Image (tube, rainbow, N blue to C red; front, top):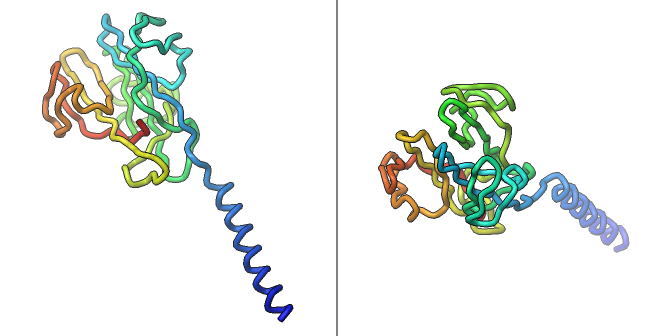
Length: 188
């Protein structure tokens, strides 16, 4: 009987050690805000997780470089976690447009400082996001919609489909922005 109890205790301990290793090796998302800004002179929407880049997060206030704070677009993770994908950040000095994507092939480089397709220069990883809604069980994920307005060379991202009025891919909505689908899934 003692051998049976010892064997069972050993099996339970082995499972507990495996669970601890599993929990340690699989970090959870660390939620951080994605701040949204608008620069009316250059017609550029800018998104960052570092409020110090613009110097304010107070909605309506004007910060560095003439960017107007528009609030928080949503939340992502500052650290990589199981199932996460990076959201890359780019800037085109020619068109004065910031661009964000999870598809490294769209611009062709992810190396910070390197210039890729269409004159976009990589600014590294903005944060980590989810590739699909079902991949995060602990909280509600929402789609981050991506839009493009060719007339002013501006990419615009929002979780509120009503801002542009369409989520149908390639359909043009309010203010001349054309839907480019879902950029990623983020926390509201």
